[in-house]
Image 1 (cartoon, rainbow, N blue to C red):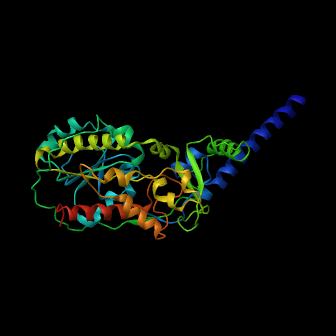
Image 2 (image 1 turned 60 degrees about the vertical axis):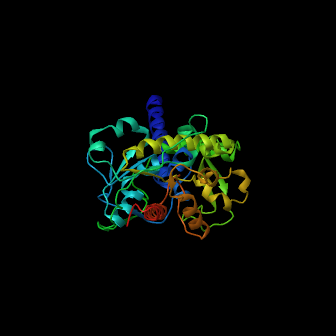
Image 3 (image 1 turned 60 degrees about the horizontal axis):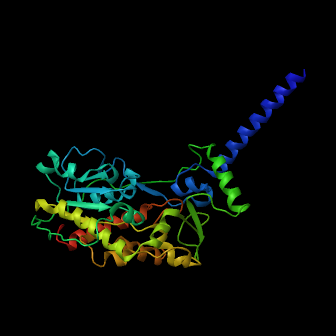
Length: 348
């Protein structure tokens, strides 16, 4: 009987533990943001409550480059992470252009430029869309001195002919796809932050001086990626080497006399919200203004557009639980890029 009682007690304890983990997962809500996931934060606190605009089906295409495109986007997660929500769909909606997106980490530029589809029907425009924090690691090249041929593109501007279905609105899932395994991550990081007073994750949290910039419950707190801090060590020489790296890219992309390179550098979330921290000195200043003051390609200056939007009180420009843009930010980015292309005579 003792063995039977022990078995029953053990089984009861196990069931209670499993039930407890499911209950906590229900309370935390399903994971959606990358910062809540890596930082062990509760979605119920940091998940945004504004609807997401989704294009189903997408108006832009992603992945394998098999068909000619008017605009080819080469980018990191800011161009690829959620195809149904990306800014490229907004640009396609507003222009009617054929827009295709490639993952910059899977592209060999020489192979792309020499491919049959690219040579046979080169895109009019290549948009290079990557994030600020990775610029030194990914693009700093050579000594920082470079020569670049001016673009020879004499192609007629792309006509703007809006078409396509507008997006639908989708809410963040509240209780679908619960992840009880995340409870362990949440428990450990919460213990570290509140008991040990150490942040053991790559997601950092800072108090904001205003509570109206996000639609989350924790709207007075900012989550950012730890790697955003890397730019604190950037020197002027690093900025020159980044320019050198992009000059090489621009020279190669524009060598055919048809294609123009436009950059759309995504500012770090920390750069845009830094002015609204209670202690701004806790985060490094953005280096975008200094970098782009003399840049070898025309940039869409997303830093200026997004900063104005946040400063004016626009909510959820970036997701409160994520490093990336929300629907509002995605639309603003598309508008900024289209305005840049129009000003450059590449669209009309």
